[in-house]
Amino acid sequence: MRKGRFYNRAMVVSGSQLIPQITQWARELGFSQIGVAGVDLSSAEPGLQGWLAQGFHGDMHYMEAHGMKRARPAELVPGTVSVITVRMDYLPRDTPAGWQAIEFARLADPEQGAVSVYARGRDYHKVLRARLQKLCDRIAEAVGPTGYRVFTDSAPVLEAELAARSGQGWRGKHTLVLNREAGSMAFLGEIYIDMELPESTPVTAHCGSCQACIDVCPTQAIVAPYRLDARRCISYLTIENAGPIPVEFRRPIGNRIYGCDDCQLICPWNKYARTSPLADFDARAGLSGQQLVDLFAWDEATFLRMTEGGPIRRIGHERWLRNVAVALGNALAKTHAPELRAALQTRAAHESALVREHVAWALENENIE
Image 1: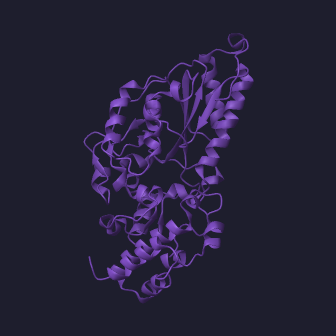
Image 2: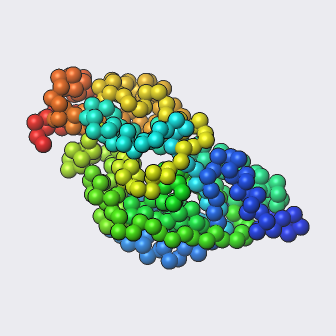
Image 3: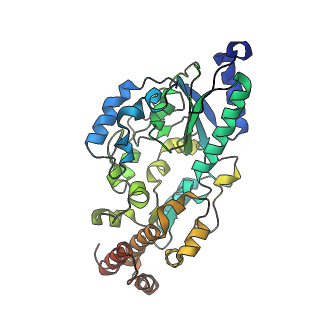
């Protein structure tokens, strides 16, 4: 936390007076909404402990490394009194009406690589972090030196819990935060601050009896309403998982080569999803609508160039080839197209054992459905 003392804060602006100001500044910086949560998240601790105990976090050991500090903001960042939460919509500016149908059609084309919508533009960590810092600077100008720390999916923070408690929306059955006016296609961020601010009012849940997100999941990763087994989630398998993709999940992955949006595409509330005003999230050339054969041909230099400044770069070229090899294998099993087989054979003797294994699986299982 950046350390600072409050100099005559009460004489400058009170917490309740500051909220409208913060809201205005946040909108000017591209954020869609702000909220304020308290630091007592004790009621969330049993759920977190149970989730970790069941191993649902997989190899994401950082999820347990800090123990219950994830649910204790004042322990994670000493001095924290309030948490300012932000939401930033991320659909590209040129997103057409009926975009969900377009994305489902992409998934139905086995030879096309499917990249999660959020990952086609600039790395959201960089975008949010820079703008959160600017928001903090404006707050400091209004109240004097203060202590704070910003988070953008980058530390042991219960983001969805804090967002729900601060009125950003409710936790959907897929565990993501849903907003009645904007769906779930948004990034979350937080400012842990040592200033007492009035807490926002949480909103009621509106999923009702709908379980479309549970039914559509290709790997049945949503094992129960509000319960996600990350080890089965395609986003985890293609991004966080550094090793081999378990064989049982390779067919269900289909042509998804980085992340998965299915539970959001099917959600009725995302008919209200909003486009971002920022160019940062516009889809970059080469990451949308591309053929798997072409993506598999990228050498490391091309991979680094095409993913520069974006979130995909974090998985590295080796895992990229692993993911595309699986997708090519699934496409080959459906189409038996010789060009797909030829593409896979170009990497059959790759220096990486990880890549070789997934290429071998793709070639050996062409006729197994």
